[in-house]
Image 1 (cartoon, rainbow, N blue to C red):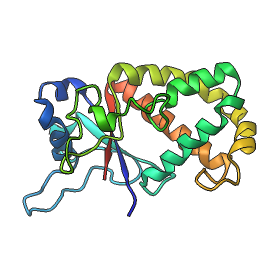
Image 2 (image 1 turned 135 degrees about the horizontal axis):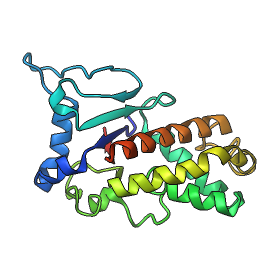
Image 3 (image 1 turned 90 degrees about the horizontal axis):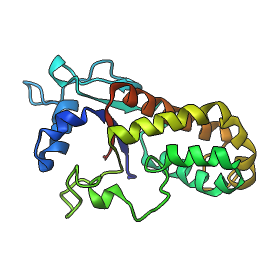
Length: 208
């Protein structure tokens, strides 16, 4: 079984009011509450796209379910590797905004700055043992806003990456099968950061 990715946007101020060690559990409880029968309650509008927890009391976070993936983190990892392969062939100005947009989401400019190890700069508890959940991404609200601005600049020019993708990624195992598959996933990430920024919230990637 592979690793799955659950992307969540959340109100940082709501989380900040909780002790660090309780923040991930608070997200779990809000997103997947246990009903009176002991089972997990269904989320409002369960399906693809933004899914809000049941009940008005949990309107401070929401889960994003990607339309173009099966939930596996591998889709995102492969797209990040594809960007790493092709970025040298991209126009310098486009490369700059794409780097800013993708860094820390599905690609790491500096692999040593890993939220799985740091707990997102201390906002969440770091992974210290096998019982502690590793984080796949952490973007505070100010980072999310910056990524949304970068995406605004990158989105109209995304087609210019078709050539670099064909040259470096097409037909290679461990990369998206086509440029279309790559661009659809990247555009979904653009929707994710745009909506989170609109709320003034941050993003968290929880593993499953």
